[in-house]
Image (cartoon, rainbow, N blue to C red; front, side, top):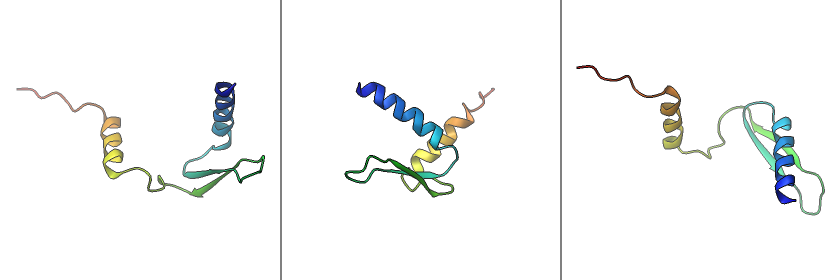
Amino acid sequence: MCVNFAGEFLDWLRQTINDDGVWRIRRKPGSPTIEVFRIEEAGHGEILTDEFINWRIKLSLGPPPAETE
C-alpha cells in the first residue's frame, strides 16, 4: 500500500509542478491538504553545492575529445 501511495503521490507531484524553479511542499499538522507552491522562479534554492553543480555541467558536456598524438 505504501508503494502505491508513493507512486500516486509522485505522479500527482509531476503533474502539479509543471515549470522550473524551486518549489515547496507543505502539509500543516492535522490538515488533509498538501500545498505545493513555487518559492523561486529559477535556481536550486541553495540546496546544491557548487561542486555538485559543476560536476553535473561537466557530465552533461560528455567526455572530453580523445587526444591524438
